[in-house]
Amino acid sequence: MSGEKFTMEAELETLQRESFSYFVHETNPANGLVIDKTAPDWPASIAATGFALAAYPVGVERGFMSRAAAVERTLATLRFFWNSPQGPEPDATGYQGFYYHFLDMRNGRRAWKCELSTVDSALLLAGVLTAAEYFDADTADEREIRTHADMLYRRANWHWAQNQGATLTHGWKPETGFLKYRWEGYDEALLLYMLALGSPSYPLSDSSYAAWGSTYRWEHCYGYDYLYAGSLFTHQLSHIWIDFRGIQDVFMRDKGMDYFENSRRATYVQQQYAIDNPLKFKAYARRCWGITASDGPGPDTIKIDGIERQFFDYLARGVPYGPDDGTIAPWAVVASLPFAPKIVLPAIDHFIRHLELKAVNPYGFKATFNPTYPGKPGSACGWVSPWHFGLNQGPIVLMVENYRSGLLWRLMRNCPYIVSGLRRAGFTGGWL
Image (tube, rainbow, N blue to C red; front, side):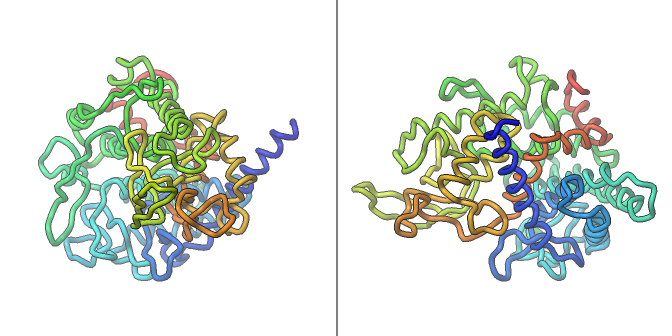
């Protein structure tokens, strides 16, 4: 192995291990809930908890955690979700087999009067199904993991989540009913639909997937034709679990490509946008890019070098149409590693060795940085987020693993519900 390749392997191993340690230390071991971000008195995120369930098998395989510890943590999580209160009451944990976006870290009840979220529930259930595939031993504990995982998945009432419409809604609140938004345009709902179509208890109709697909936008940007979604994470999350290489639905057959190739193109569009840097933000370059839904230095408006700049806090930033305020998310670059290693590996190396973004952080990369916004004097990074987020740590651990070994993809190819969902959505070819 060449010295440069060895260094990169070592960097990936360290980044993966440090990112994984978030789930070791920022989880309530009694109920398995994972804190959304490392701020005082912050609630748990069900999506981050789903990432944790998917990450434990990686931890076992990489020697970051013993199988016994992973079994114990996984069981605690699945038992909590199965036994937690399900009902229309405003302080329940979930309803109709779905769960509230944010839960109290200790008692697991709804936090912040948030919504019952269909997509966050899908990310949780994807983690649940990962556990069922990985923990396959004939022991009482691992059998219980498989049983609980199956019951949790089957309980999600996808018919209800349609609210009598063709497509799935974003969610529901006990005070006001269904949210007015439905899933439209290509995004992370690809995973949501595979899970909903594959359900043996409340499966969506094929027409629901077609109705969602009818809202797609095909674009040409920076020399690439691709299915548009602005934020980089939307091209990544479904691919954590599903290997879309070589399999196609009707839309992709018509385009002569697959969703994996689409994500590769979206990744290259991100890099090209940074090279072009139309808004002239600091530090955007061939090895410094990555714009996604993330926190930021705002809300603030300040004049920098004679230009009035508006900065945002947490926002779905996107390329090429914005919003863009100069905020870069290293984790989103890492999560594109399987699609475009040729441009992602140099960017990771740049973040680690030249910007020293990982140096003093316990969990690898901080969420975001903004070189244009004034930060510590002499810092090349400008403003740096004070936080780590579970939603960022999970994709780092899991997509680095898919790049290194394909573990998640191998596991989920054996999941009958995912396979059924893909087939019902019209996917054929490749490993299917």
